[in-house]
Image (cartoon, rainbow, N blue to C red):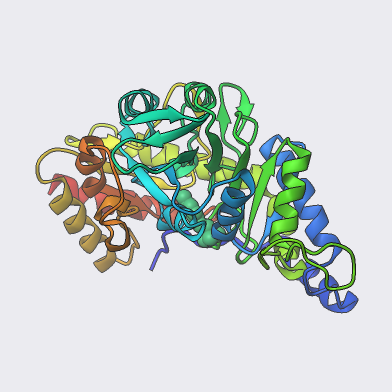
Length: 383
Ligand SMILES: *Cc1c(COP(=O)(O)O)cnc(C)c1O
């Protein structure tokens, strides 16, 4: 089977892990954690970063750190991995699910402005959702496929209403928005994931990056049991969300190769695009003019009436031919845990999602393997 997206472990991972063992620094204190945080901050374009056990735990603690409270609503696109919505729930809040901007598959600033203008009201310096009476405290844009949302208007709209902004940039390292790096777009905190299917992995792990040193310190405090001093003294109900030195050792070896991996991802995406350009009824993955995509995933989307059927049939055929191809994140408004979450109408998401096909895009995918994928897709589409 040609896998969909698997880690490329062919650098210094083994060497650094052996250093952890030899030094006995295998747990949550160690030089690799510090080095990893520096590398993430540099790649995000921020003053600092704090590493965590996972992207999900980073998002949870980030929402708490910026002040999201029980019973709040947090604005979030419906098309995301369920971790974004779950992190909102873990913070005691509820996602307010939004439809997408069609050109980027990310949060639509016009829809955001419209919903805030028509569905919320200000009371005592805070913003409330009229239909549910809940406070709206934050926006959680998701950088779908690693592609930045149109952050300039989103930040402007959010700040004008006093909303905090926490970005789910799980796969966005290496992305550029209007010449700026993915962590430097005006959010309070930006989360990155180092799960095994991301462009760089730590085995598992996450981080937040940002420029507000006090906020990063609060986040670190919250993710490390809220300890003050050395004598089991804690000042807040906090979390144990630290990254271990073992994870960070793998993460450092991977981050050394981030640029190389992104070149590989973009080359893979470009070869698929060239190959499928002329096909009828197929749309490319988004390429908004404001962004340079890190091309985390490759694939395309069938459109038209039978898009969902075609996507399923092609994926089934590819798997029979030894090629892993999958659907993409099932939207939150179609998931049981979020059946009752407040939402906008979802015309773009509902039209788009069923037709999406993701294709093999590991950074060490060979040209011969990709040629096989391309030939199999072309034969199916023409046949
Ligand atoms: C991978 C991913 C996450 C979750 O990260 P974990 O490290 O697996 O917890 C969250 N959001 C998005 C959009 C992701 O792609």
